Length: 456
Image (cartoon, rainbow, N blue to C red):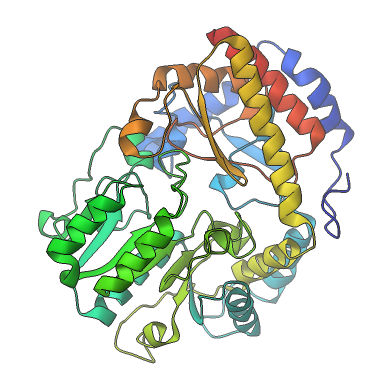
């Protein structure tokens, strides 16, 4: 199909179109090879997975193992096909195996998979990020979102000479020690309020406030504002399910940080280049001191970045005294994927098309739930959305916790059976890609109609 103007998407093959028409009617879906692989994996990999949420602990049952992704679809090792609403947890905004990214990766790999030395593409990607996100005057490339956020916190402490940081309940900033306090996401799914192995002395330096509660921040700043190096926040929370900031909340938080000399670190690992070309800071009119990126910025390859004000970033070694390094930072293959992705997203109409498709999915899910008499709250910003199984508004950690996780689990497995792959946790965002078109939307909504009716 021809999607957004100027960006060609791989047409769905006939096999994909046939799947849209008939897959939801299929019965007796077989997962025998997935089960066998999971049994093997548990012998050598902790929990059988290499990232906790993949284990299906939040929904029950065994995880599905995949062998292939193309466009909007994934195929598991047993040959079952699914419309993908996980998108590798956010990076695949253009869909699976997007041809220009694949070609860029192959071309870069042929020239060498790693140099351990500077390459021209690193400079090009840094220039593109800075040109796209005005608050970023200098940027350092790393290999993951966690690496970016940990480095940003160290930089904030080094720049300000202060030790405390402030984070927000339910926000997840990667698996770095400073962040595993009221971290939501996989920690919440597994029922672990904090993580063993994080020293209590270090955890005490991480202050927490409820998301969307500016008064709580004001009280914390009044007591400890001059000791806090930075406040780090997901502008749109994706790791407690999607939580939407209240009107002016982020701008007021920015003003409060400036008043106390606290650096504002905007964690755009999920939202960067997804909610708008310039990320959530473009959408909400913000100018943070530091920003972190990954996921979309790497085009599906392991890449992260942190950047911000020139005077702050100039403190990073070797220009300044705050040390940070990485063997694979600026990896040429990952950089090639990131460049190809960000260049494709610059095409006219990209985000309008993404909003149109995401809006169709939202409206359809709400309508199907209502028709089935199933109370839900659907939160969406752009191409990030979560169906919460509660009739109450969801805007912070406690309200998200009211969601009926047992009901979500039943919904998840019903959708999986009908060929739709959702995040296997009530407390994770779903992601829409530009590879999803009207046929895939129809498939998702037909599956949801059955799934909601089974719950009603």
